Length: 311
Image (cartoon, rainbow, N blue to C red; front, side, top):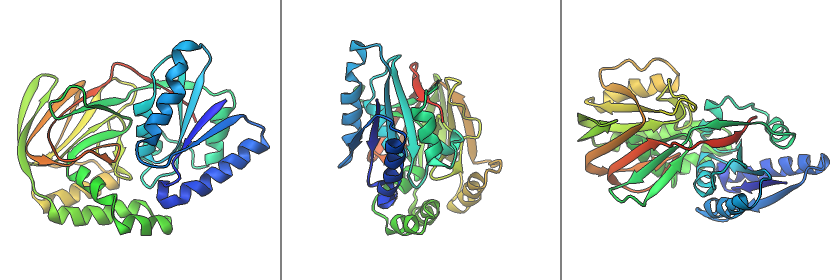
């Protein structure tokens, strides 16, 4: 029995139509499944926790499939009980779909459904954890990236942006990231700070953003971490500091068009753990889900793995 957690609000409601096609396929093929539809933010966390809590009571596989955007996948990951018999599947329906892009998912969703439900194979991949502030108990998981500064401010603005709904309506959802990004760039204020990369402190001036990656892409196709590998046990950091707003524009364009981000103001680091401190509270996000302004976050590549169902 495959458990589907579906976010009907994904891509401004288009996920409902996508799920209808998926459900029709499941019924035609007589594939057993259960549907769990989310109603509000946080539902996917609770549903995933409820569905996988019996993991210790059985050796049978428990397959949980998220249908939604990267934020839905992130919520399911945060509720998932990690065990050998817990498998996570994903059918991307969001605007950004950076996880699917990074993992080279096929464009045909019914192909994904067939591979997920027909004798599924799994692969072990990394996920990240982030502690917000200095409170050890406020830990969140992420599958793609987390960030602080400009990139997170864009995620925050997208939550209430009319541009996102408009571009989703005409099937150009990725453009909303570009338009809102330009608006937020005009508002952006840099700040000083430092990072501690695997125990080594590095002081920074005029920080625009710092993103921490399990996967290469974020923000609807910006490749900020081309070397990110979800199986190497490491984080890839992209630090933009010391530059002006105008100097950030060519960096963003290079990331969008997958060109090398050669700039004196872009610094990349590979590590297991990083602590980030900024002198002024700045927006933060995990997989596009915002968590409010922070001055300190600690990010790690988890020692645990996810059993991801291959598509």
